[in-house]
Amino acid sequence: MFPQPFENLVNDLCRLPGIGRVQAQRLALFLFNREAVLNEELAENLIALKKIKLCANCFSLADDGLCSFCRNQNRDKTKLCLVETALDVITLEQTRGYSGLYFVLGNLIDPLAGFGPEKVRFRELKARLKDKKISEVILAFDQTLSADQTKLQLKEIIPSRIKITELAKGLPRGGDLDYIDQETLARAIEERKKI
Ligand SMILES: [Zn+2]
Image (cartoon, rainbow, N blue to C red; front, side):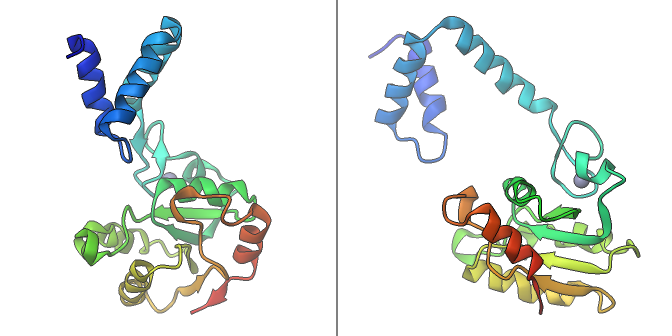
C-alpha cells in the first residue's frame, strides 16, 4: 500500500513492546516528516547499541568488561543488591541511597510467562557469591508473586554466612518512578529488614 521503505519501518516498529500497527504507521509518518539529521542520529544510536556489553561481574550494562559500579573502588563491596533488570539499577542509583554493588538476575521466576528458574541467573549468582567480601545480599524486587517465588529459591542458594535483607518497600514496576518517589525508595533501602 505504501512505499517499501515505509512498510519496512512500520514492520520494525510493530515489533516493539506495546506498539500496534496503527501506532507504528503514525510513528513512521512522524519520522518521515521530521528533519533527516535527527533520523540519522537515531539510526547511529541504534547501531551503537551493539557495542554495549553486559558486565562480566553483575550483568549491568557496560562499555567493556566491567560496568562503572564494579570498577569503582569507592563502592561498598560487602553489599550486593539483587535486582530483576538493568533498569532497576538506574532506579536505585537515582536515590543516591545505596553505595554497594549490584547483580542483575535478568528475570524473576514467573510460571505464567514461562519463566522458570532456568531463566534466572541463579548459576551466575552462585559463582558471584563465592566472593568472601560479600556479607549482605539485599533483595530489591517489586512486590509480586514472581518476586515471592524467586525469594524462596534465593534463600536456598545464598550461603548461610551471608545476611539476607529486603527493601522495606518494593521497587516500582517497570521503571515507573511516579509510583514511588526517590526519597521513599531511599528510606526503603535505609530501613531494609532481615528476612
Ligand atoms: Zn558490574
